[in-house]
Length: 137
Picture 1 (cartoon, helix red, strand yellow):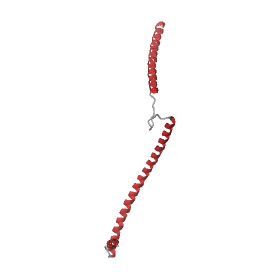
Picture 2: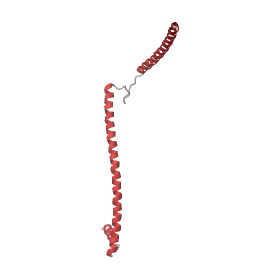
Picture 3: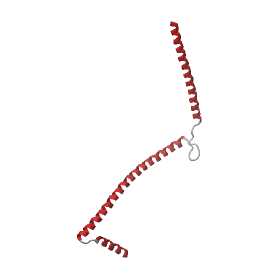
Picture 4: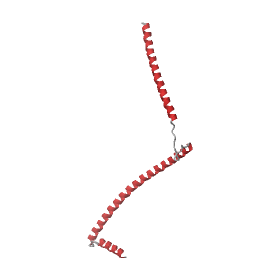
């Protein structure tokens, strides 16, 4: 009975060893694949071409990056300025609507006051007279 136990433990260890060998083989093949990918990537280095058609140096690339950052900052500032101008435009449009409505209300009020005072049409006559005198002058 003791021998059977030792034999079953040995068989379990052999199976575990086989699994470990298989995992080791899989890991080695994965490592080889990753290494070949790295080698391929190193051989395919990216070369940045400048506006003159030549490869850019580090200093040229640094200068290009600084210019790009400056342009991004300017674009962001202009974007916020546009947003502010749009909101101001909406406020001004609403103010214009309110003032136009008040002007119409004022005209109606003045017409009623002219009628109450018995001089209905005075403002129309006055504005027509002013327009005629400006044309003749």
